[in-house]
Image 1 (cartoon, rainbow, N blue to C red):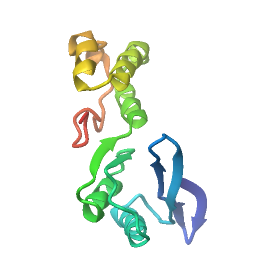
Image 2 (image 1 turned 90 degrees about the vertical axis):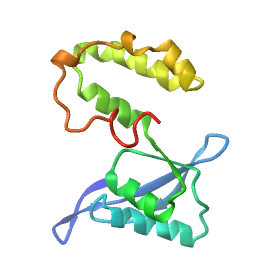
Image 3 (image 1 turned 180 degrees about the vertical axis):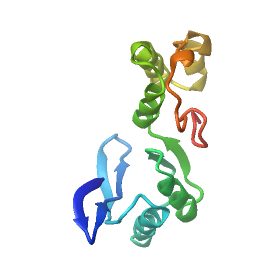
Image 4 (image 1 turned 45 degrees about the vertical axis):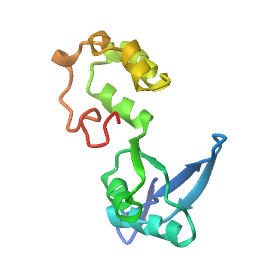
Length: 151
């Protein structure tokens, strides 16, 4: 979370970690103050959680902030990584013209809601994806080709 409060001319950033229980309920795990979404800010938060007894997370889901992924690999190197679907979809849509959004959203929802990878591929072959590449805006980073992509 980024706050509009300036302390000593730096914007305050709050790394927030939310856990999900087996029954699907979300729970606040940790919140810390920092000044950027840096590796060090996230590593401090994760080390504090570890010090307080948090076990190694089986899976970590994040928004793509590089500081989080680097810190996770440092503090909990065996945790698996996944990109948040909300942020992944937003990045894909941002690189497409608005006219292609409805079809792309439907296709991405089918992939997201599939039972497993095989079902996702069967329901949504690449040939059925909206073709908007020729008029798409160039993207600084593509969530589909990043190191955390579609695994």
